[in-house]
Length: 412
Image (tube, rainbow, N blue to C red; front, side):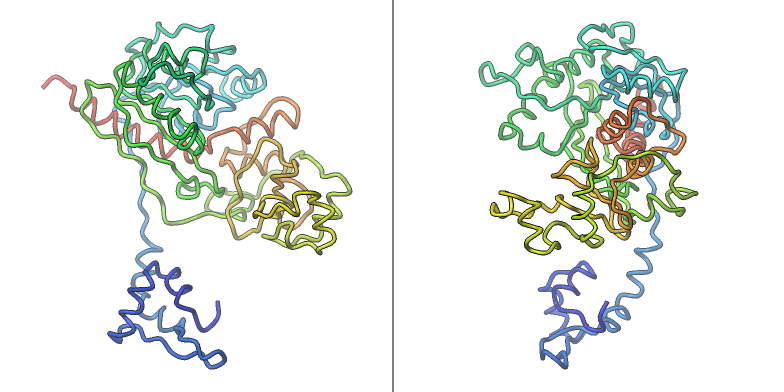
């Protein structure tokens, strides 16, 4: 960073508003100076650092942890389990998976290969009854796909949602009657059908006896995941339980791509070698010209026009196109296919998509978690997963909740 910093840069650097900085300037607490070349009012970086040395030290060394030990053995029934991102996270938090349902046969093979002792219920959720788990499971979780409901009248009930996968999620929660259920989804659910879809889900959970905690969108980068991914979390608490669910507290440290792929705090070795997709020769010729952290606008103008076609004239950022990730930034959200045009995630140094194991690292899967099926199937499983470390932090919040619940419900 330069010796001088503008008002905006200083404001961002120390997390204080511009108004506060102007007031401090008047009070002589942190004085701005005239920058020799431009004559703008700027701050000396050394002055800012001196004033905030104590503050920065405290920030860097502050290590909060959401870790909490389960007081009992808590059990999870997971629906729409995919390749196990959420399940592995929950396991790391000390929760025990009693059964997992998943329709995709390759994801089921992945789950069986890695956890032969898990009870994998392969097939369409509609064909399973879960009544055997009634009052025997502590948590039902599931990343149900976001689908529109058909609205019958003002208040959406369980019957109106028939045919949707959220209906199946709610049906299973009703059959099992756990103290808490957790649904996860994409951020887009907040605005889907102008928010009506989410309201519908909340009213269905209300009908089957669950209060919904305030909805939160958790950013994976705040929970030890080197990826800018966001997940909406929907928490239902059985109405007889008067306890607040506390979401995991965000960590200050943000991990980047180098932390994902190289030996360091997150992983104790460099990423293992593995197979991966290739770009076609024409795309390599274009992406070779894109610098780290660059995208299509960094290409020569004539190549931009050819590569983008009609999109070139549509405006908008489209910053995912021809995008090369930088070592010192978290990765953009991974998709199910690493080489599709709208969402390139090119390796920082080499002109290629991330390999399967690199993909898994960015999602914080352990290196010994193996994926089954073709390369395309493996990418799809990883791209669809909940990042393991995010699942673990949510798991700690569930453990904390259940510890309190069982402590309260013990006979005195």
